Image 1: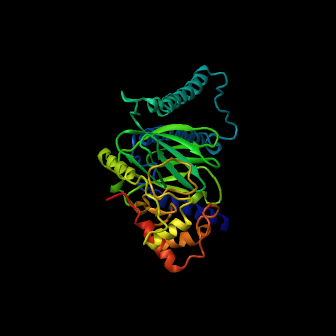
Image 2 (image 1 turned 135 degrees about the vertical axis):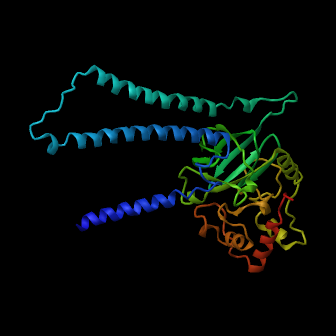
Image 3 (image 1 turned 135 degrees about the horizontal axis):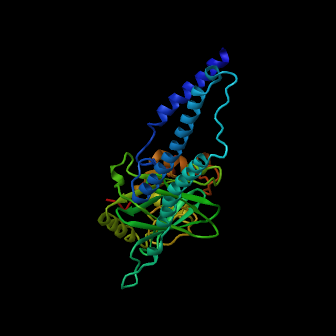
Length: 355
């Protein structure tokens, strides 16, 4: 009796969890709320495959339950022998043709979307002046942060990808250390960042991120890459093309900006003495830096990809980064006084290109 009650308790718990999980979708993070053409295509394929699987499950369950009810021993007797169907051409035809049709129904759209979403030939198209017709972003995954370079625009940023809406954005995916995987759940993906080769694909962003709860879409590393894999997040800001062009101009305007050790700003002095070897404060450059580019740090949504974007959390991160993201390559700065941490945090929060 108690064993039966335990089973029902487990079943009830699973039912309650299902109800709660059904409401867990967040627009900035959920694959079930696609915010772009690629995400919508993948969602369509997901719904198709789910529908086919449900059809098979329901059909099998109907046959199973019907057999139990209609042909039970208590109804037909101990000596009843069911009709023998061995060698029935009709049945053999049915259970051969139906699975073939279901496989074709699944295979045709799968192959179609695979080739459609894998077509990156337009990435190489150039105009009369030799400039790329489409935006291309080089994504380099590192332990445990993301670097985004816009090679045709001459700018680089980190941790926050900024893209225009309603056009194909092409990506070159690579890794600097171990295998990672680039995934923006609400928009599409995922695809691996490998050390030994470059993967290419495109996404289309059809929703302005400023309308979302946090003002950004969430991106994740979807390949187990180390102790802080779960904290290897990035954010995506989407905006109309005109606003994106303004952002590019603002980033390009930071060319030549460096932290000056002779500055009257204590935070800038300390940054120049301690941090400049790994972090740039100009958005004009190339990939390959030891640490994330900080030209637009003040505009970011998070500190270190997951902590609140506040001076308090920033100071905690600077003082002891291993406590918050184990295995990352940033050294601790425990020797800094509270006043020095305040100064550096204020300086970094002032690094902004958005108006």
